[in-house]
Length: 515
Image 1 (cartoon, rainbow, N blue to C red):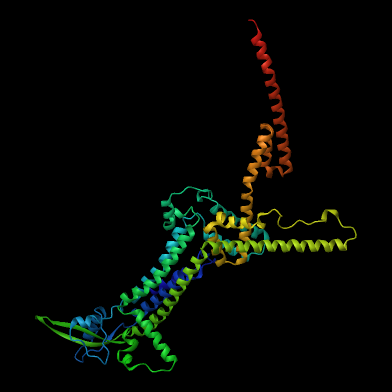
Image 2: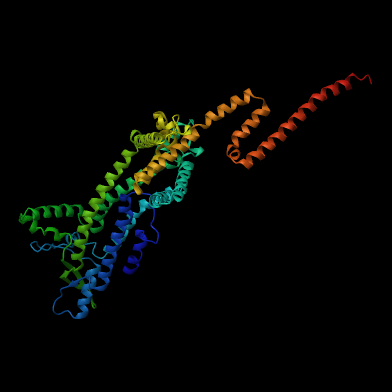
């Protein structure tokens, strides 16, 4: 069992031939990966120890044979033992003794495995709902990591095009309601609490991811409470007393006498316990001999160290989960997420302006060195056009609010968490250019409508065709073919028009015929 658990750890940790792209942050991986690995390793160690050595060793009277001794060890192991401090009197009633029993000793490997499963459930929830979003976050993050590490510009260009195309297709889905749609109040309320309705409202990832964060917080806190029930001890009190002991040891202060008399920390994981069992006489059904023996629990020495470490680990997990939940919740606030995008757009604009100034300075130096400056180089083109939407703050706000929305900004933040701000800045720049091209489409359509109303139907259709097939016209061969087809169409149109002009005269002649 221990071998099988250890064998599955490398694949669980993600150490495969190729590095995995995880659509989450470090705190998430600390929950579903590293904590799961840790608990499984502890479970394997405990399992191996329990099956390779004696789990319990009881002191028996001298009259017991070896068979009696084995029986005593087994019966005390499966029926639980109880702990009473050496300075206290053993309770006389069975109910009092049962209230002091140690319920965890045999079940530690199973408890650890169960806890590891609980830590993995929120990740399964996230993976399941993420796969229904329509965007493969793993591929996006993996492409971002490749873009960061690859040096060849052609490959980086292809990777960036893939990232932009994937994100643009997701955030510009017609069902996401980029137009002003009339939604009932009930559906708006459902969009807040139900992911199915929030999928096309631009907040699907936000809702699912925050819900996963809440599950991690509840899971880590709930497991501390669950350990109280599973172990049958006040586990949180054990941790507080442990901290108190450490503080006293650091300050070189002796422990209180009352604390020592109560057994200190040994009362939670005692090494020496008591066991009661009865031996019935074969010929006397109602007569039995009751024995109380002392038993040594060697594994409790390991369990005490193990759960001491787990207490500090769980405390760290709880704190980090709460901090991560509030951090992501803060990042989803409307002004904060808008500022995240607009700040980077301004940095992009500043970078382009600096390039433009540098190009102008270099050009002026070249003109000073040359005796005859070339007229065609009098003014070098700027990296960003003067009429670009990148210069307008209102376009920055519209880009963040109506184009990216909350899901698009979440994808960018997650990409930054797993790659770098350098990659995300380039992605934002390319997405803004895509947004700028789409924002200019209504202007083009309005111009076409005016052109169709001003020109005739034939010339208007020809002009519309030229605009629609503008990429084709850039090719000389295709342009020549298109011009030839246009000439033929124009000739045919003229012939048809002349024929139609002759038809009325023929009709008139036929009508005036007296026959």
